[in-house]
Image (cartoon, rainbow, N blue to C red; front, side, top):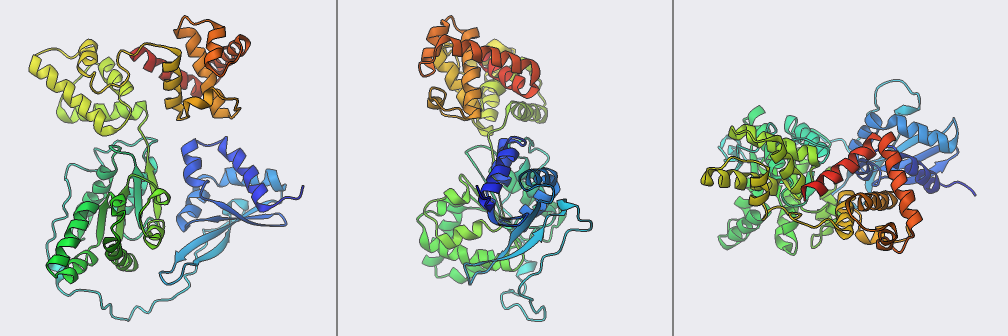
Length: 476
């Protein structure tokens, strides 16, 4: 069969997916599309200059090997980079750059900009004297990088945030969109950027505003006929941090005014930081032209923290509050509260308050009895249904899938671990266990248990998966 750019790139992706973490693959490789295949040169399109730089810095070796495996020793990779999107046209400006991983020496190439700006032109948007005003940034001083715990769940967002704080408006991350579920630290990180900017460059005008507050201010300005003052104020900012932009949904006039403020700030080299509960592509009720601008820079997601990160968060809070708790109590809380950071910290505060009011020493028994309202899995009977639910939540796969016939690797892994745990933690027969997994026979269960035992002995990462889940079972 004749090779096409899509077939070659898909084959490369299959190899890459097996060699990097799932979240890294989703962030850095899913947005890439195959563009063309000319001889032994594969051209892929990446959404920004930042993508190109990150791939060349972190994945160039892996890319080179996979391309050569598909196209032979002379196989080469070329990037088609979306450099700029004009506000007047929907067509992005792109440029082609060969990968530096093909053996070429020298520095990374500079990318030509299609329009040269005349720096002698006076900017009519500058408001004389406004820079001398003292503007309250509306930031919480407790939200800093020092007390923001970094983990695999937020490393990209934190690294990008710190880069923005060091050089606001001077990086490829403009706008910086931080998105994720409730209580994962989006507001903390966004405000930490603002606090860091004010610490390093006090003269910068920084403002933090929630989307709801912005909408309310806009309505008030319409009522009071002060719309020009409202727009001029936000256009004068050096850094604007807009929290919860998903709340723009359905507010067409407010979206329109923010669209013009956004354009002015971006064109003036000012930094824009946005937070949302969803990725830009999943936001509903927003104008397409505004959504397209949200995608110009970097969208970094915040995931649910893993066990180690949750424990680090609790220890950091304990240290800040000057308290010390037994390790098993910290582990119990971190193991059982895995939804979000806010709930995790709330559980710790509740535990401390109960211990103080009742003048009791905090131990594991007290923690179990006091935190029933927080801990979803408290006093759950260990059943096969519960094991399936726990394992599927851990690997983020639907329970129905482990009962299906699919042979996808992640599903097979979850199915086999579930069977192994069901055999070891319940008194159910092998035949009955098989029946819980789509009517499989006992020989399938035996094979699954043997496979898991072999992988525990030979694969450290797999072993850690099983140990984490077993800890959750013991804590229930």
